[in-house]
Amino acid sequence: MSNPLHDYLFAPHEERTETLLHLPGGDVLTHADFAARAAKMAGALTDHGLRPGDRLACQIRKSADALALYAASVRAGLVLVPLNTAYTAAEIAYFVSDAQAAMLICDPGDTEALAPVAAAADTRLMTLGPDGSGALAEATSSAEPIAPVARAGTDLAAFLYTSGTTGRSKGAMLSQDNLLSNARALTDAWRFTADDVLIHALPIFHTHGLFVAVNITLAGGGAMIWLPTFRADTVLAAMPLATTMMGVPTFYTRLLAEPGLTRNATAHMRLFVSGSAPMLPETHRQWTDRTGFRILERYGMTETNMIASNPYDGDRRPGTVGLPLPGVDLRICQPGTADPVREGETGMIEVRGPNVFRGYWRMPEKTAAELRKDGWFVTGDLGRRDADGYLSIVGREKDLVISGGFNIYPQEVEEVLNGLPGVLESAVVGVPHADMGEGLVAVVVPDGDTPPDLSALRDAAAERLARFKQPRVYVIAAELPRNTMGKVQKAELRKRHANAFSS
Ligand code: MLC
Ligand code: AMP
Image (cartoon, rainbow, N blue to C red; front, side, top):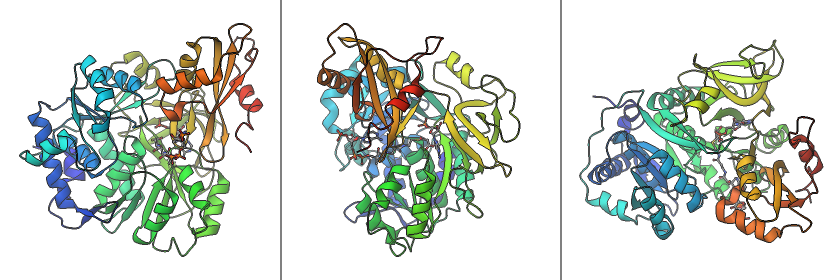
């Protein structure tokens, strides 16, 4: 009986007494102790009625137990649905009911807010705190460990929700094979081994922190310095113990602002990886000047895992995301068609391979619109390849803003604003923001002569939307610029408000 993801990531290390996690405060957790905890947690989840294939939603803070929940979920054959800790109860309600989650696990402090959400969705609620507290932690301590449940590679391992360009968020269904194939490709491409110590300061509810950073460290058998959030001073202090770091571009710009970032401070490191949002060539250059390292930039997305990477050996080119990973097919097509562009031209990036997801949960039309029958996935990113095959992302066809590595679909924000009193319509755009890459500006057209009360708009947005989706700048305008087809010209709005965040 096999469980391919468990067999690749966890099984080889179950007896090892080497460190897996360096925890805040100086404690360490060994591979063996982690595996034992995960086996008991899988037992506790099973005792509470979860069965293979059940969806297990969680909105919990990052901790050793939060990572054990991932391992337990793989072991018990569950489909993990990790949710951003910034989401409001209203946002969680949608995910839990859409995923038909059998259980929601939340922080003990959020029980009051989320108990009605779980009750409304007929979902069991358990708690798990970052400090060993919570009903699931207690149940784990007294549970019997279970053996890994048999799974096929095609069985689902996780749903990751991506915001929708139109309407509802979509649950991207990822199989064991999707995760496994990418973990293998990346471990090899970036040379991860048991000697590696990764600085892990990313959240673990997204592809980057969970499937890229965690999976390949586990696959290599190395250790992680497990930080609850990113803080530049803490990360810098960790470097003398570490060999690698993965982060979004904001990590790198914030580290560059630290006078302590020097060649000496990074002398123990071997690799810095960036992704999830474009890194400015200037940031690459500054990093090399200060540390001597060339950041390895890669490109991926929730639906496809990682697609392309600059080479470990060889030329890492700023402004590009490198070459397709082994096993990943990539082509550039005329947008709206499946016809490849001529060499060197810009077009829609399409991807095919074992890394590409199995479709959107219960959304066959949206799946059909983006995932072609012959396996090519239409990414929504525009790119071109140079004569050596290096890929550059030159824009996005999808109306998407990436702020600090989090994706925001303006339409979701506009729908909230448009429903508020005093608002006729609105347009939300992302403009340059020194820290987050892009920041959100909302242009609001009043419904009548009296402009809406901006603080009321802010409060209403705060009630419905996670903090990172809330516009930081509001502008009142008499009308929105439109083209002859009546479509709002977002490019024009981005131009008009380009300096909204410049001081
Ligand atoms: C926090 N805030 C954000 C934000 N993160 N606002 C916009 N965008 C963000 N990304 C809010 C906070 O709530 C706070 O609100 C204010 O901004 C300033 O907070 P901060 O303390 O400066 O931010 P911090 O908590 O330090 O977080 C910034 C960050 C974090 C960059 C460290 O956002 C982060 O860890 N991002 C990583 C995202 C990620 O993992 N993406 C991978 C997606 S997978 P207030 O109330 O104080 O104003 C993917 C596929 C792939 O894309 O290819 O990898
Ligand atoms: P997500 O849906 O959160 O997985 O975000 C995926 C999107 O992030 C991709 O479609 C790209 O638009 C963007 N992205 C990821 N990595 C990079 C990168 N290195 N450069 C530019 N954009 C990136």
